[in-house]
Length: 207
Image (cartoon, rainbow, N blue to C red; front, side, top):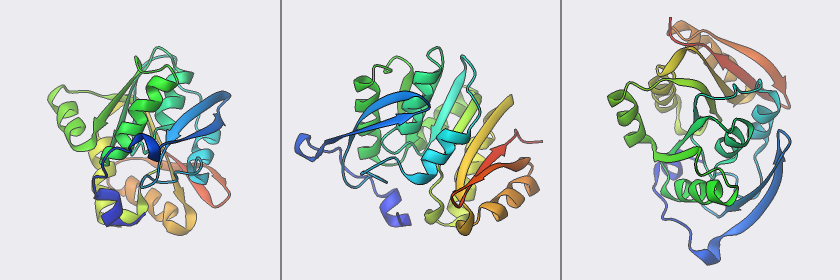
């Protein structure tokens, strides 16, 4: 997905554009509404699957973030795994947000998942002094290094003191250099797994 496509707000899908995707994530059966014009609309993409497979077990409760939620596989899985958590699912794409909201209802986790436009969500987080216990993200590397760095540092700065972020990035799209850069700007980062060309990166709060 290129930068223009990622940042272009796509209108919510009409009913005849929707289709159902069934998948299993961390032992949970998902039934998800998907449509075109949202990243990986035909399946849970390989990177997200690796993050779901390798990220540590979630706390029983807390404040979680799915950064760049797409149609919601990470956010919905977070809510199913930690039923006492409050999960923010954020994206810049209107169609993605609509699909995630539909999927929260369809998978009966709408009480746990709050779906938000990323820009407004970041403003609200700062206004309310919110801190996240867990962040999961398959960040949109193809938006460009500068834009992705800005996005990541904006949200990683909101990690709770004991919080952790887990990112998945392809090795050949700069995962190792991202680890080095994050550590250089005060977010200690390390690879915790490497599978099928993807790095799973753990990031600690800013020091």
